[in-house]
Length: 193
Image (cartoon, rainbow, N blue to C red; front, side):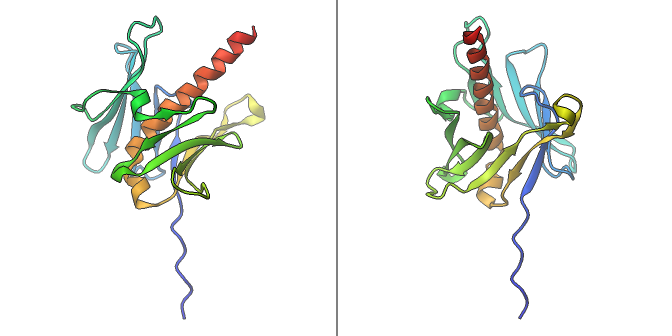
């Protein structure tokens, strides 16, 4: 009797830069490649593009319009595809008040939740009682905590079809949750001064 088949390895999406406005998220063989770009002539709009290297197509998956620093434009907004309707970022991701994280609807009506576990963001299904992560963000590491990166940041996504289908929403929700986490760190530092 042959041994049971091994489970498929997780999909590793490497994040090239530590920026939330200009970076690329891709697999090692570029079968999945997202480009996150904020142009200098539109400093408040971040576009998430999916690149298909086989057909040489670039498709805009989503856009995030950030609140302006002067506060005139209100809250951040999100829209999927070029011609989708704008929705509030708080309407797309239900942020948690007391902790870092938030929940959003994936494809097929499945609700996912970002949460912090041991200093790392994890994505879990909201209805899962064991809170097994379906995706986990691993931050970058530096040589002696100062020099060049010894390991880039990356996502480990379990090869569950419904999660892989929701990669667009996963990346947009991650950008929103991580931005909120970084902004809360800045506020704490300013209040302590």
